[in-house]
Image (cartoon, rainbow, N blue to C red):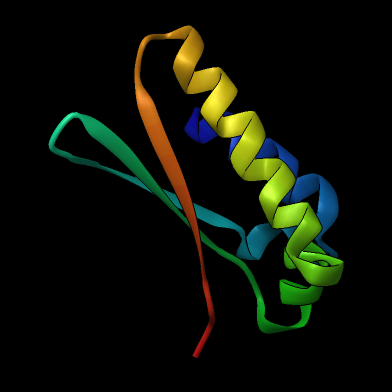
Length: 78
């Protein structure tokens, strides 16, 4: 699942070297955090959050196929 989000994000951004996906388990769920460069935030989030929501849907479907639950948070750079 982490690889899926990593692949999608790197395909969208101008600076793929700045893409970082971290994964942690919280109870029975998997939580992924996506970090990208500040200039690429708009590309990852998309208009009205459509791109980020599409990534979340793909992640949930992938997790459900494995019998798991997963969530994605896009972390704003500092």
